[in-house]
Image (cartoon, rainbow, N blue to C red; front, side, top):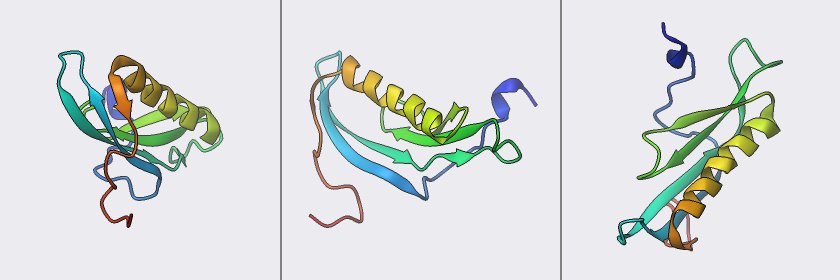
Length: 106
């Protein structure tokens, strides 16, 4: 197993703490809507005293679901939100609440 294979491989975020759709303009000038889902931080199995991860999905920006690591739950969440902030800063005309996430009422 290589060093890149040790993180959990997730296909869904089962316990989201934030879920939104952001309209934005790409660097190429296209207007798109991306769904952003932040999951609840979890301890890495067998490593709860040293390593946590926060599941993160940013549609059209990150491939699949990333497990963003940290030395505790707050650190993992902070690191995940750094990626959300980077997405925000790399696009223009970002508009949160650009449509309700699936399964939520208006």
